[in-house]
Amino acid sequence: MSKKMAVLLAEGFEEAEAVVPMDIAMRAGIEVTKVSVSGEESVKGAHGIAVGTDMKLDDLDAADYDMLMLPGGMPGTTNLESTPKVAEAINRMNEKRGYIAAICAAPRILGDMGLLEGIRATVYPGNEGHMKGAAVDMKAKAVADGRFITARGMGCAVEFGREIVTALVDAETAGKVLASIQY
Image (cartoon, rainbow, N blue to C red):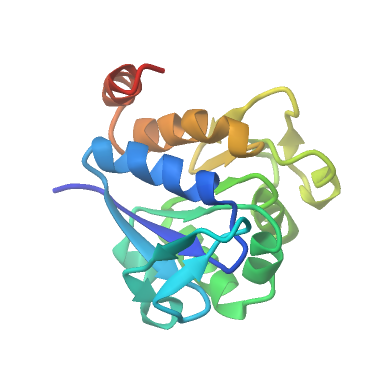
């Protein structure tokens, strides 16, 4: 049975931070569901690229998934932060002991929620103050610690995808996928 990842897309998300890890995950056989935070059928990213979605946030039951993924970007991250149902989905995944992955500024959401206490993590520079109790590593491109995967930004999207595949499938599969894309 393949693993399942739900990607929360809010208006203004950083396109590459969503699409690159989704592509890598799908190449590894992970079932990816694109979730519209706004409820619209497609969500426009920070640079005007619209991405079609598979479901609305109102219809998401995080317990049906193995991982939640939060792309960053602005105003995507602030739109995630200002949507109470996003926090509900994150809490549901955390209660289930499932994986939570966030890139760029989005890890600050997890930090502000107190979920990164004692966890090694990274975040887009300037957001370190939101990482309550985390062991912040600003040199790492992507960090996996337990059930949490974080990455610094768009330039780290491939490494972020690798950590997602390693967590949900295995390191060998992640390596094969990256080799197949000439990384």
